[in-house]
Image 1: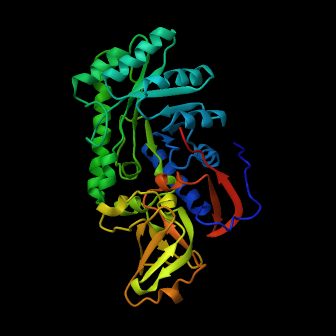
Image 2: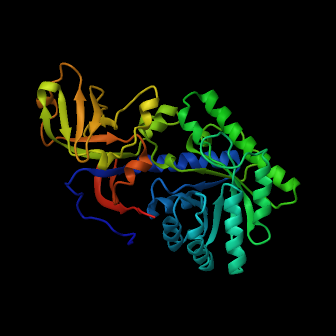
Image 3: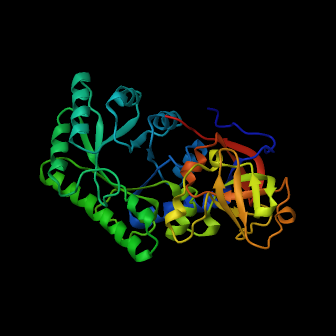
Length: 381
C-alpha cells in the first residue's frame, strides 16, 4: 500500500468518509498528554483508524508501541516501521505460524490468551517449533467480555501452562463496560476497578514466581477518567483519535472533537411522510446502533450541514437500507425546500471503528474544507 496514495481532486462521489485533520491533531495530543500526566506509556489501538499516516503522527507525539486487532494490521504496521506490537485478541491456534513468522522477521509481537486452554495451545506450538513467543494473559476486570478473574485459580494455571516453552510478558485488561456509562464519578470508578484488578493479577503472578513486567489497561472512557494508574505500565485506547457519538454519550468528548464523518447526497423525498432519502445506507454507516441505549439515540448517525457546521436537530437518521438512508424531518419542515435533491449532508457515526471499516480511504478536511487528498486505510484480516 502506497503511503502517498493521494488524489488531486476530492471525489465528487458520495458517500465518502471524511477526516477533519484539525480535530484529529487535537485528539491525538489530548490522549498523549493524558498518558504523560498519568506516568504511563501510551500504546494506541490502531484498529480504529488502520492508517499509517495517523499511526506515524501518534508515534511522533511519543507513542512508540501500538495495539492491533488483526495479524494483517500487525504485518502492515511492522512494514511501516512499528516493531513493538500487541495483538490484543486471543490467538487462534491456526494463526500461530503466521505470528511466529512475524517474530522471526524482527517484530516484537506479543500475543494474548484468555484462559488455560489458549495457554496450553501456545505452549504446545512453541515446544514443537523450538521457538518461544511472548504472551500476555487477558484479565477480566468488569465482566464485559473475556479474560481471567484477577483472584481466580485459572490465572495461575494459565501462567504455569505457558512456561517454559512460551514467555509470560504480562497482563492486560479492557474495561469495555465503561462504554455503557455516562457519569464522571462512575467512569472514574470503572477506571479504578480496571487498574486495581489488573495490578492485582500481576501481583499474584509475581508472588507465584512468574515474571510479569507489563501491566496494560485501557479503553478510551477509562483512559480519560482515571485518577491514578499506579502499578500500570501502559495505557491502551483507540477510538479517541476520532471519537464518535457513543463517546459523546459517555461524556468524555465534545461535539467539537468528533473528527470523523460521512458525506452523503440527498437523492429523493417522501414529502408526504416528512422524509428525506440519501445515498448513505447501512453499507456506509454500518449497522451499529450504539447510541440506542444512551440518553440520546441518534439513529444511524447525527446530521450536520457541512457548509455551516450546524447540527440538524430537526432531522433524524431514522432507518437504513443497504444503499438508502431514510431521514425523518420534524413536523412543519418543508423537506423539498430545506433539503433539495443534490444537497450534501454530513453524518456523524455512532461507532467510528465500524463506520470507517466500510471505506478504503479517508477524504481529508482542513477547517472543514476538503484538501483534495486522501489517506488509505487497511481492511480485512
